[in-house]
Image 1 (tube, each protein chain N blue to C red):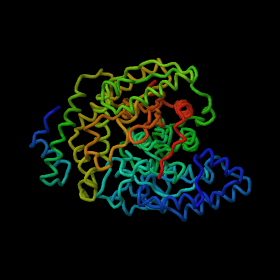
Image 2: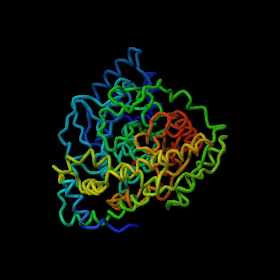
Image 3: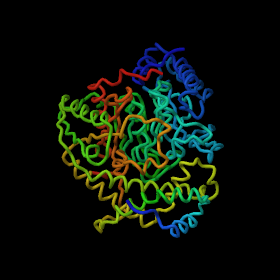
Image 4: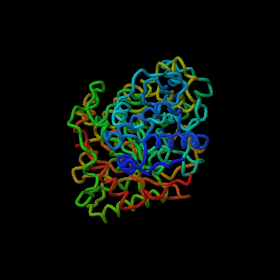
Length: 64
Length: 462
């Protein structure tokens, strides 16, 4: 499990998103940010170059 | 008070033979809804004027021998993220408490054209993601099998109202499992149709690349009857494909003989812990399919953890984009659960989102490869029977894995049917997925499984 997001980065991102968090809310959310960072790390393994997000999902025929 | 028939199929027969009047059915549904509302909180609001007007029109068609089909005169309800002309559509949120749409959503229009009678607007998790919440203008829906228990979400009111026999069917929406979760915990059937099969026009979004809308009902057969009129192109929804309308009803009774069913056991045996009843339900369903003539084999897909990471990041990034403006301006008008979840989503970077979309394609390709060897996939649908509603953690979607994400990511049709009962007599569902646009085959398998298992005779005592 990843560590929570470093506080300076957390503060910068929530400010950029214009989220009016109280200090208590910020600490609660920063504590569970470790789940998000764990997910992000899980997806960092290189994918095939052809995994172009522009054609990630094609409704007709996807999964065939 | 007249009791409602048990299913839409039965109601349609009774209406067609003039053994029951649509007006009687509407009055019975409204009376039951009012009686159970203090316990179940399934509805945001009832719509008696529209219900009785639609029921009288259906009755006139009944008497004239001009019924429009099996939904004509049948009491239904819509999740309160489906816009309804002149009727508030709140998404169960203070943010939209006074939002009165000018036009019905496409699905609302299509059921109304088929003659269905709108009884009311159903509770949901806030904006189809935040719940169960106790700090909103309306309380969360509760499970008819035990009102101290969770319905799952987000189509919580639909699960409760259908399981309690208040309405015979209703709409849900499914971005990460919001039809299939409540179907499993409330002991009913629900199908997440193929992405692109049903128009989403007029449905308040959660995550555009994953959102699907679909029906929930007591049986798979009723889900097919409800899904049929929803299928078809809609120029107002570019994600809704212009394909010849599929027939999802005619083949329902053809059984599963000869079909190849892949059983995805590693999801619940290796990737996450589930209750004994869930594991038993999968084995019971597999055995029933085999007894009905299906050919079973074990199938391995990528780890559920990979689907979960990808699914959560895609939903989170897209949901944040939907809500960013309101979060900045009206943060305190959200319930605590949703505002904190969405705030967390503000930490997802563009690069993270695109990495998740790239991985999504790899995961989808893995499912497609596995499905070269089978027609359907069978898996667990939820981790357990319904937990106590007060015990659901705020960040439940992060702390536990989700068995339904894989088929949101891939866009495949997937349904849940009741496969038995576990602790305290609470229902347990299983999940059946098919190839894209093979929704009819999924419904046919669900129908066959319900008949083989005989689970549809048992109802909540409420």
